[in-house]
Every structure is written in C-alpha cells, then in structure tokens.
Amino acid sequence: MLQSSPLNLRRTVVLLGRLFLGATFVYAAYSKILHPTFMLHPWFAFKFAVQANLANFAGEVETFKFLSAANAALLAHTLPFIELVLGLLLLIGWRVRYWLTAASLLLIVFLSVLTRAYLLHLDIKDCGCFATPEPLNSMTLVRDSVFLGAALLCTYFAFVEARKPHPWTAPS
Amino acid sequence: METFSDFQCPACKQLYLGTSRQLNDNYVATGKVFAIHRDFPLPGHAYSRIAARYGRAASQLGRLEQVEQVLFENQEKWEQTGDVDGTVASVLSPGDMTKIRALIKNPAIDAAIEKDLALGRTYAVNQTPTTVIHYKGQTYPVVGIVSYDVLHQFLDQLLTQ
Image (cartoon, rainbow over all chains, first blue to last red; front, side, top):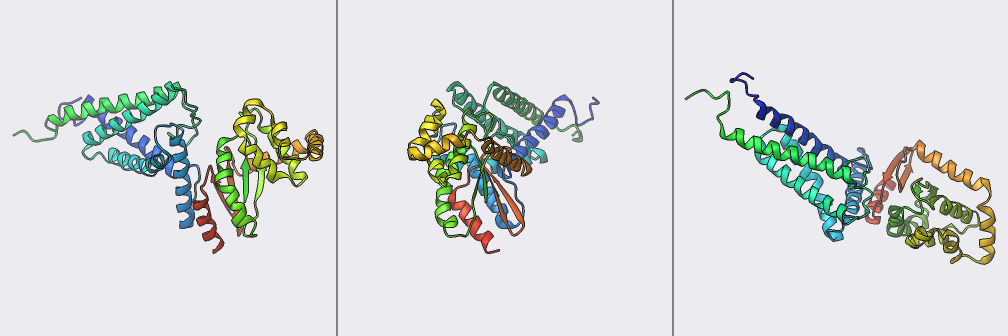
C-alpha cells in the first residue's frame, strides 16, 4: 500500500478484526437479551421477555457449575450488557486498543470456563454462547480459540500501530 | 396458556416444579388462567414419547396431575431405567393402571400427541418448554424456564389490559 495510506497491513487487520469481534459481541448480547423469547410490544411484555431470557441464560451459566445460583444470576444479568457495550465500542473504533484488550481478556475467561467444563465432561446442552442452542463440544472450543487468537493479534497490532505517528499526521 | 412440554426434558421439570404448580394454585384454580398441557416429545429423548403416552392416557382418566407430578419428580430415575410404567404405577391404583396400559396401545393416543406436535410447529416451537399465552387475540410465546415471580407480574399486567 502507499505510504500515505492509513491502511497498512496491521491497520487493515485491526479494522477487520474489530468489526468482526464487535459484531460478534453485539450478536452474542442480542442472543442473550432478546432470545429465545422475543416480544417488543407492549413495554411490559418487552420487560418480561428480557427478564425471562436473562433467567434462562442464568440457568445455562449454572450448568457450568463454577458459580452459585445467586452469582450465576448476577453474571447473567450483567454479562450480556457488557458484551453489548464492548461490541459497540469495537464497532465505533474509539480507543480501540483498550477495548481489544478487554475483549481478549473476556475471551480468555470464556475459553477457560468452556475448557474446564469440557475437560470435566459436564453435560452442557446449551453453552449459552449465541441464539441457537449449541451443546458444548470440541468445535465450540476451536471456534472460541479462533476468536481469542483474532482478538490477541488485533490487540498486538493495535498497540504497535498506536506507537507510530498516524500516516495522515503532517510531518513536523 | 398452552405449555409445550417433554416429560424427559430437565428444563420442563424445572418449569413444572418451580412455576407451574404455583401458577395452578394461584391462577388456574382461581379461574384467571386456563392452562393446557401440550405434548412435545423431543426425538433426542429415548423415553419422552412413552411418557407422553402415559400422560395422555392418564388425562383421559382425569389423573394427569398425579402422573405429571410423579414423572417430573422422578425424571432422573426413569430416564436411566426407562421404567415409565413403574413410575406411573407408584401413584395410581392397580385398576387405573390396567386401564392406562390398555389406553396407551390405542393409536388415538399417538394421534393426539402428533396433533400437539403439529400445533407446536405452527407456533414455531423448536424447544421445550415453550409456553404460548393467548389473551384478547394476541399471542405471546415464551421460550424456556420462567420463574413464577416474573410470570405472575406479566400475567397480572396482561390481565389488567
């Protein structure tokens, strides 16, 4: 690419990576907040649907057997909103290296919990990852490893690029 | 309110034990809600269909409540052994069991289960439990487990509409 272009290889990887990871986090949040029960109207039905979905997700978290029922409920009522905010921040692209770091840390936690459950042969009928019910299996671990690999690579590239002057910066 | 349920599904058991019984006491018994049990045996569960047959047969004798309760409460046991008959027999009289054993051989029982499955598909049911609430021409499908506290708030608001 031309030296004056803002898109060298690393920047292109970061751009594509953050869009992919951002969209994935937003979809994951949508899957937990508005699925499987979907009602938008009237307001009390929407509120009920969200409560029912988060309670369902809490049940899925409980099957991983690493949190008490109360803590699983607390996590289920906060994690989808963290995913939503993180996903939107990645899509917006503001302070992207920090949010990529946060995404990497979150994906490390996800992968650790999934790997632990897989090694313990826990009967996870739905990992709670996305809208479609998905039993925990080796493919789930492979997919999350790919997400984590992408997040780590993008984080590294984002920090490397942040140390350099932006290609559009006027020479001093 | 129609609940599409599978006797071998753990989430259905949770819904039954945690929500349905309180719902029956506070809304169904008081006439505020008309509840219907719909069979939706999932193909992945080895004994769901036979349990549904026993449930259907029991409902013809007016014994669905006892059979539903004993099947859900002992789900972990009979899903290991497949002993649906013995589980149901533990709460019914020998006379009722004789009638039920005859009824489950009737093709009409399977036809009724198929009818529920077909009805579920029209509501796009693809997992159990799924509760479909109808009120004033509106349909509210609720997928999965809903706690009684959350459901009763919704029903109270719905009933005041």
